[in-house]
Image (cartoon, rainbow, N blue to C red; front, side, top):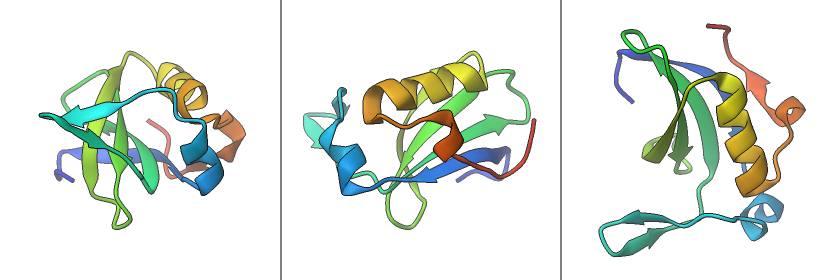
Length: 93
């Protein structure tokens, strides 16, 4: 992860979360799957928020951009069935 961003929220995914996935993420023609962790991060020079889809080491595989933390949380809830209270607050913006 670049040094220019800070992790605001994180959640570890379970098999239950993987089974309700509603979106496919691609790298070229390859479907990305089996994410281990989600992170909401903000870059120091950006007013938006990124939902990072990470591997078991916490390394970003792909991401989506959102105008607010609430919209990033809503995307994770829709896609994986995660409720906002399931997230770990790492720091506040």
